[in-house]
Length: 211
Image (cartoon, rainbow, N blue to C red; front, side, top):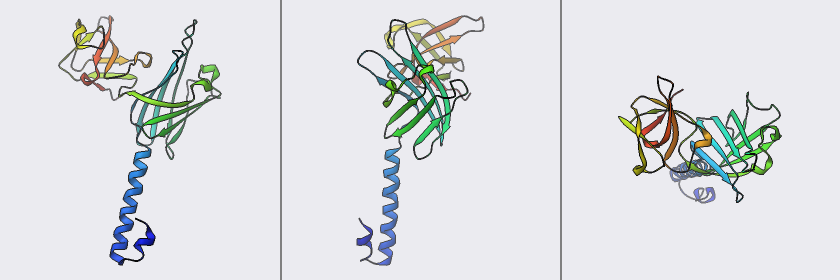
């Protein structure tokens, strides 16, 4: 419905029309910027890939990046940065990576578009520029067990449970390079005796730790 059409109807209908146009524009904007928290991937035919663990709270963005080159030397790239979204785009800043490394993140529908400029030292070249698709709701970091008891599994399958388990309230850690597509996460737990146990746990049995 156009404003030209609104002009030929009553003032009351004109106001209603403008309201509907505003709602339409708002809904359209929401559809453009709907990328949600989770891990996004860009994968290549040669086996190399790059993960982006993306977390957004309002306009504040936190992203951790891991690139696997799939080379004989097992070359990897990494980056951690934060920033503020402006019109769906964010230039990340990092205190851990090279200061000349510029990483730009843009939300495009349900995807992320990543651009790496001057990041060769961090092994994130322009080869990894492009559109990233979401593979899981999981993000890198610490999680708290929210099930009464959660067993570790040797594979991301229910039938592969092991004897080891964690209890409600226990804290486990998910590293970005261990993230896989789907609803399972490969986490590790360090007990009071310092012993480390790792394996797959359903993401539904965990919740992201506040800090």
